[in-house]
Amino acid sequence: HWRFPQSRNKPFPQRYMAALRYWYDWWLYRRFANHLFLPSLAMRSALPGNWPSDRITALPPGSQIFAPKTDKEFRHIPLNIFYVGGIVPPLYDLKFMFDVMGTLEDVQLTVCCRNSEWEALKNYYAPFDDKKIRIVHVSDEDLKVYYTAADLFGLWWKPNSYLDFAMPVKLFEALGYAVPIVTTGGTEVARFVAREDVGWVVDTKADLQILLTRLRDNRDEIAMKRARMLDIQAQHTWQVRARTVADVLKVRSAV
Image (cartoon, rainbow, N blue to C red; front, side, top):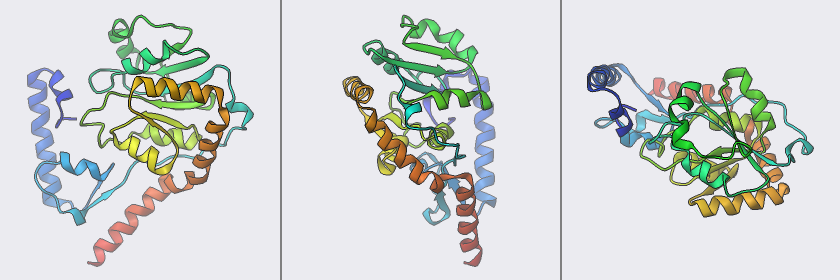
């Protein structure tokens, strides 16, 4: 985050001292690290200076596979959408999400965020229909009930340079629960969703309104994406990520 504008929201002394530590970390990497594993190769452009491309490997988070739900359990009325994560602009600005929800019927959104963030920003997101948008504050194992109750997982943000390469853990949590993903375009998450065919990518509010209306009325389309997620879950576990590290380092040690 220190390489991007969102860090400027912190007081200058705090920002300055943190930057010194980050530059020192980077100096240590360049002096001692043989190989870098990044959430995505797109992150290379954010690194200071040059790092040899043959010493960088993409290593996104992994997932834990949870027992799949039956098709009947996915056909809720209303359509249930779940979001978990930050809500602080400009990095995580969910106005896009709140605005669209106000235009839809039989669609419900649950937003899970830190209580402190919500208390600071609830006026920013107001007004909204609390029958359509539910705010909760849970973490860790308590998230399971919300993932298992969701028909869709929402990752709708305003595009920015940090999200262009970020690969959040929650993306792979949704994959582990086989909850199809709806996300905005222009990010590494969107590229993953499109490449793996595990959800839908939208670019405008109108696109999102049309998509959610269609999915609300055509649950078979959601079931097809869920089946696809079940097919590829085993390719994205933490065990697979660990094998990637072992294989890359084995090759490098032989060079």
